[in-house]
Length: 214
Image (cartoon, rainbow, N blue to C red; front, side, top):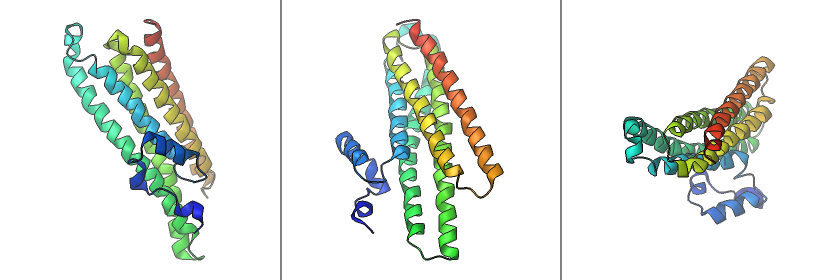
């Protein structure tokens, strides 16, 4: 292994880095953290902004009618934030599989490990996309009954969530190109493109809610 690969943070270490250390690691000549890991962290931050907006909304008399809905959203957003953390580690682990396969001699083991790495490199961003879309839908619901002073934070969360979907689309497209089945690759690209359109529409709707107040 080269010095570059030996200095790569382990998947479980990424989430324990300080903000300063994480950004420094991202800036370094290292494969991890890269776009996938950054997408996971951004997704967690997007969700956290939604949780903050909700925290400053729940319990206010003006929104008493939405108490039950707010309770559901609080639970969903908290779980989503945890899932983004797990997917950040999963993305790094997927790269680890690739590195393991790369170091093997040609043969059945290398082929199997390479296929597993490719599958992980596609599945993780697809799962992250689904999660980001779910968060966007929850932020859209919250927008209907949200403290007006927190709407810009809600909008920021929406923008970051859409960015996660677009980042994942890049990862899906680059890895789909390595699939031996072109039909399957094209289906993946089309599904990812549809998800980008969904994210853009949800973000647009949330922006309209914010713009009515700002």
